[in-house]
Amino acid sequence: MNRAALFALSALGASTSVIGAAGAESVEVSTAVGFESRYVFRGVQFAETSIQPAINLSYGNFYLNSWFNLPIGDDDLVVTPGGEELDLVAGYSASLNDIISYDVGVTYYTFPDLASGFFDVLREDGDGLGANTVEPYIGLAFDAPLAPSVYLYHDFFLDTTTVQGSASYSFPLSEKTSFDVGGYIGYVFDDAGGTDYLYGTASADLSYTLSDNGSVYTGLRYGGSDIAGGAVIDDAILGTRQASGFWWGVGFNADF
Image (cartoon, rainbow, N blue to C red):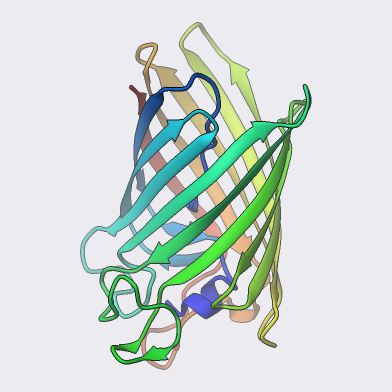
């Protein structure tokens, strides 16, 4: 995928989701493994079926996260940054008061299946055209019904600015089962003169608690954008990829 067109596009996604850290001054570890029938980031699909593992470390209010997208089979967009992807996140999250907390950090997006090296950013350099980008962010979360939050992102190399708001709610069904719904909506401003666009995603998951430290989930998602035609890549080579539609996912979360 063209990352400039992309972020002009989004974990978790899937975005890539940021997990904040707070609490005791000790290292805490959490992991997650998801299986998604599509990899969709900011309203645009960049791969078909994918495994998405993540490892998250926290110490007090500081955190480090790593998130992977690993396509299955030959149906990923192998000539674009939407196939194999590794996102590295570093941040700091804390409370402003009893209602509002803030989150600041930076994400480094890398694409192992491209010819560019780990440190090659999106520019011409001695090793060719780099694809990796750096995106700092700042966000506010509110201890209120629907757990609303709002984030501001800016990718220095793609020259895009993104504003995204989200909300979620969990309906308890039993002692160990819940029905979790959520969604986010965002807008990408392409400061380089490209396409500005609106995107959004909604999800519904059935979650089951296995233990105090582990849970599993399965659910349905719908996401899309208002990009004309839904094309992210050169359709003369690979054909148009749909930017809107349904997909599904299953996953496992564990804390240590």
